[in-house]
Length: 131
Length: 131
DNA sequence: ATAATACATTCTCATATAGGAATATGTAAA
DNA sequence: TTTACATATTCCTATATGAGAATGTATTAT
Image (cartoon, rainbow over all chains, first blue to last red; front, top):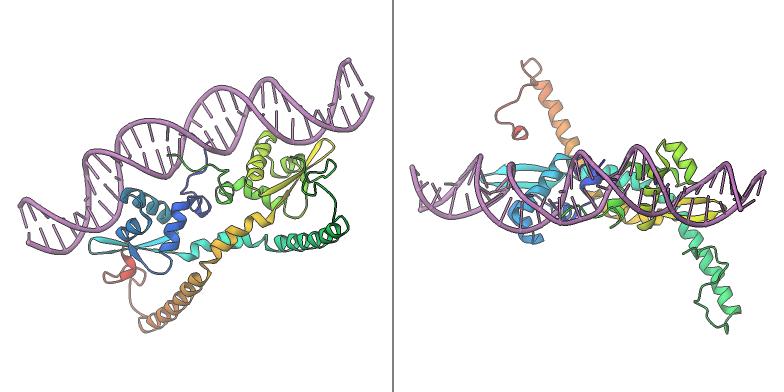
């Protein structure tokens, strides 16, 4: 089985860096395709294809104006990603506390070991040096 | 050019739904591979391969304990995704306001058009019915 | 030493890419 | 009604994938 289609959901659609750039660019106001091409320095067919993906998963809205197509980011479709990643927020907060505590511990060690050599070399029995 | 590698960054790594499930499962505490296999109902080699991807982009930490490998989500690595998606928060707030305002406008229309037929049919001059 | 357990890796394969080139479609201008 | 402009689609190709099956490796138990 290959990877899930880029059009299967917002997660897959935003995995492509160029598509994230397009979403950034279209967040403030709607823009015609040509502006995106010029701004991001991509080929026009590439941009059109990226926009199709973004449209299929609802990440952008389109509107025709004469012969141009005006695209705009649909921020609402990004919300689920923000919410999923947000469920981990409390964990990285915990980790930050632990890192802070470790750093403080380390400061004490550094002081008491001030004249020790090879401070940065690996210690054989350090469980954090598995690789 | 094919899609960017799943190991190229966290965005690509979490595009796979199974990997997101694994991250959810490993967020609270570290777990051996066997537990993930049992919990998610995947084949063991599949889980190992997903874990490798997650490890390569820093989304999980590993530690050996006897013959088991204990994996744990590294929430810190999810933070960039949360921050990128967060840059759109103010936009979806704006959109919500606009939607709310539109809904309120519509309520008035409904009342004044209360006995009109074909209320749900498209109106030719409705700019929201471009497609 | 041998077996059992827990994971990891390798192999094969069908498939969906992203970019480039060429072409098609749709709209406005002359 | 040609012509120009703006965008979309199609065709092509190399490549990375995820699953399944088989095998490899490391560690503990007997």
